[in-house]
Image (cartoon, rainbow, N blue to C red; front, side, top):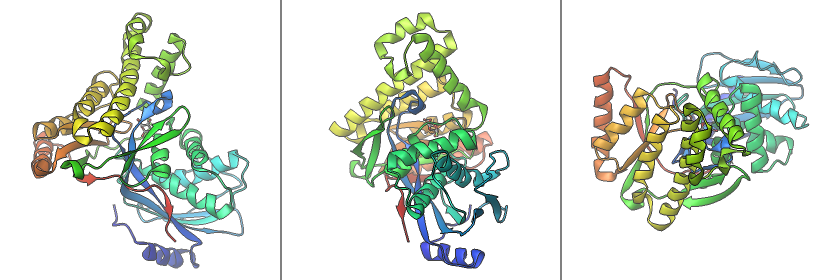
Length: 386
Ligand code: GAF
């Protein structure tokens, strides 16, 4: 990963590459999810927050339909496409994200002109911290402003989901882009994925003598791989057999009966979603009444559910979570879609060095790549920088 550029550097780089100043620069952050995993596409509840790592995109509208794209990461040079003939199978690497956004806007009947586009990002890629959505949200914010499309945040959320589902090929929900587009600094976003309503929940770990660490295991994952889609299919099957529109409509009290109707694997998937929705609601309640110091056991239970029922953890994530806890974390869980990526650990400030050292040492002993460990706090959502 390159160090990220500041606004002036990004504008200067854009001018050097494309021969003219950008019309503007937009930024959209990655996210961690405090709790509520694989609940979004089940019409359920999630509690993510935006982090202070973000994608930035400098954009200039062109007089024709050509798209020229360059990033400060990757090594593919300038890639070109034509807005009049976008093909998902031809799009390579990160260029799927801006092209997917243009495609999704076209699907909504919006005319999108050609653009020159330079992308920079310090969101770790493939780490489950929403690096792809950060790019999509920065691009859609730019195109929304520059074309005067007038989309509200909820519409932009749905358009970027359409980009992911229909162009990138990842059957994801709406959590990541909702955090990236709608977050407010200092708060987690309590999102009801059924109607997109949000409540901002203050989250001040420092004020509670804690720090939230993100532990990037460096096990790269993609939601376009089969694991994510197969979990989604299991949930849809479960909802179908149980006769509900979405697993959101299954309560804890319904689980015993569900056990008699579902095959064992589908039952475990359903149980994860149902109990995870409940954990989100309880986490919100605890944050509002007792503060971050009270949510550790719910983070732990969420991880166990993802490891045992939803089966989306991996050895590296389990090691990160177990080691962080043994070294003093009051709660820890994998975050994001799973099969790799990052864990989060809520750690008393004084134990932070011990937790970092213990996790690094455990990874070295296991022969895993060194994890990247950094603290995160709730940052603002997407903005125009220039
Ligand atoms: C990924 C997806 F993009 C989200 O929509 C969500 O399903 C998450 O995995 C799991 O909670 O980040």
